Length: 388
Image (cartoon, rainbow, N blue to C red; front, side, top):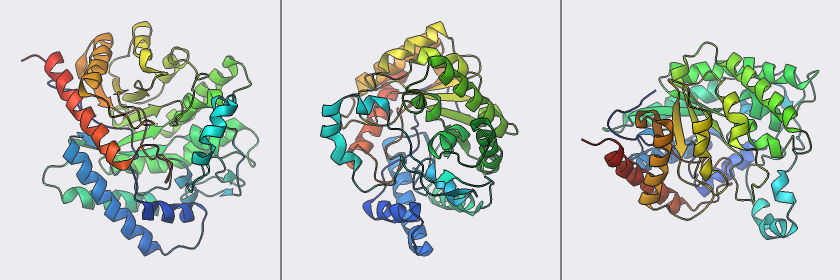
């Protein structure tokens, strides 16, 4: 995994805006409606070319395909795993429903046309990896697009859902208990993880389950029960990553990529020591949004183990404010100072900008300006942190 002795490298959390036509196709695809595959493939490739070019233009060092080939960050697994059908009834995040006026204000936004993450398919049969074609096609398309650029990324990554978020959001009606289900998912997803790495990409495993489920599935349970869930999910993830070197994997953990109160989020202090148990080479954490911007201080109490890298989220992905480069630089300098080594810090975003097709809360033009500010802020911080 790339790190630099001369500057702060830039990356992001994965998903980037999809055009409206592609969103409409993915909504149909997620519902398993009839769809002409060639039309979807052409739309994906066109959009992938666009987001790769834009990332390079605004100054992203470690980039990806913007998840243009996927309907969402986790429901895509229904197209490569067996055993899924019907609909889950996922609990709504507790912070959203405890404020009636907030629900009234935001309900129109939640009801727009998008891939539905709250009622994803559920496990009704044995979960096995039965179709590697989607990830093979995604990697091949991404490689073809990259080959068309004379100055490609310094490094590339592709995302994949963790066993834990699939188990938490695509509910179980087949296995005897949750542990059996999440380990079955780990065994199934291992094939996808290993394939992504075999194609020369860093694997980013998306694990919002390790934070967001505290105010979702575990909203009415004691903290201890949630922490046992975190430990189990990390054990399942480690099982899936067993054959992959740590320095080829980064893990993204967040508290839910939505504008909301977030006043019942689990503190990073409660989970950070457990996150260190994952077999990964880098952590990507939210550090820009108003609820978690202060938590860089947690690394004083729980020092970042060597040689783990930290991808600091210094851009909020739920607001249309464009961060000033000086704000980005200050955030990176604070993080580097408390970690104690700027070469172990990368600049990133709190989360993705379009985690499910149609779900993005930031206007597309603003997304690119935010990423341009990310690069400018990283350059400012680098001049201060790496004096020549």
